[in-house]
Amino acid sequence: MTKLNETHDPSLQSWVETANDAASDFPIQNLPFGVFRRRDSGEAFRGGVAIGDQIVDLEAACAAQIFSGAARASAEAARSEALNALMGMGPAAAASLRLALSRALRRGAQEQAALSASLVAQDQAEYALPARIGDYTDFYVGVHHATAIGKMFRPDQPLTPNYKWVPIGYHGRASSVVVSGAPVVRPQGQTKGEGATPEFGPSKRLDYELELAFFIGAGNARGAPIAIGAAEDHLFGVGLFNDWSARDIQAWEYQPLGPFLAKNFASTVSPWIVTMEALAPFRAPFERPDGDPQPLAYLDSAANRASGALDIDLEILIQTQAMRASGAAPVVIARSNARQAAYWTPAQLVAHHTVGGCNLQPGDLFGSGTLSGAERAQAGSLLELAEGGKAPVALPGGETRSFLADGDTIIFRGWCQRAGARRIGFGACAGTIVAAR
Ligand code: MN
Image (cartoon, rainbow, N blue to C red; front, side, top):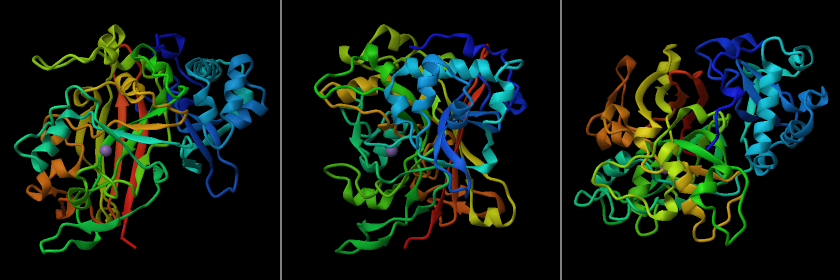
């Protein structure tokens, strides 16, 4: 578990003045990593670090001789079109670069003159996936979501007997993970329909899933499990994640092997990865409700009990085509919190994923599972929020939604806020539904 250090000092201010705005997601205490280029420039994508409304171009900063020693090696590893090399160097490498950037971006830093020429405005940038994602695994840690969905599919037994013992997951599809802003084409597929034979056509029950993305840092050798005590050394950082889901396709296809085409058409990840180090002030105990079993030994550690969970506030916004046309801003339709929603911690997911000998690689992606709270207003999917169509969600302008319509934009936001720490945010994870082809 990362300890607090000088980079977390809430009193630090940056010479990038927008980073000092209390509402900024990217103060000097955050310094998340992403991959970007100037929009429509034809430039190569390369690594960058968000600060206020700017991006530190790591390629340009290297050329300007801003870094030395370990920080320089880390920055050079992050100059390419994906962050896998930096991720694979482990947490000390990212920490050295974070410390160097924190010092160089502080008010009064002697690097200001040289580094200010390496800034690119975020509103002039476009983003790529932060990593080449070799494998994507989707977990199911949202216990309130699992219970609510379980009630719809299996009223007699909402939570399967394994849920409180095994971190449930399945291997997802990496090729269709896209970065925030990429359009999402409505999938076609088989659904059960009303007749004797299944129907084929565009999904009529398209949904989002509010999740966190955990990016793997250093990998492990096949056959060599990562013990829970070392698990966080293999986690690079956290982003926002929308695991788009076609509920009608899912209902027909999911037995006996789980989701398939219902979820493999697209998943959207936010451009910025907030490092585990940046999240250090926002850790929380791993706790089980009274009467629930304690985890098996390989999923348990003192450090995990003390601070394995992440206290991250989350919200979901929608803007329909009609809202956009009338100039109406996106509206919040649900709010949740990762700590309250999650039954398992990120370290437990890493330990479980590898305990049978599976090798993780730098840049691999874990989806947390849908992070719904216990209340309806905390629903992480439309399926829960609109109760499967029984309680359509009312929107400004008189529209309602039970599932997503073409032209709908879904935006996730996330942030961490705690007394004694500077608030940090995750930026946005957005996608717009496009009509089926
Ligand atoms: Mn999911």
